Length: 78
Image (spheres, rainbow, N blue to C red):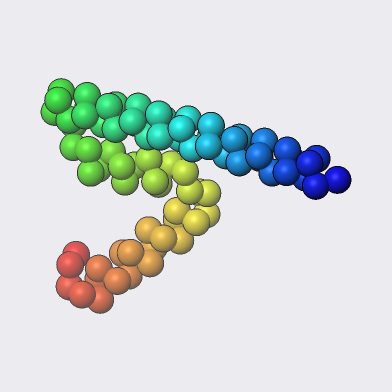
């Protein structure tokens, strides 16, 4: 019984390791795309914000923008 359990654990660990490698490769690819965007003149900080906003649900994004505007007004920022 222990051998089957040990094999299962080893296979799970190996899957995690492969996925971690894939994740690293994808992160490198994303970094390359941002570098390309920067090289042609885009503002990467703003692009990262846009990507974060696009991931959000429309209602969550609207709520966050409303709160942001409220805080900015309270601080005299516009």
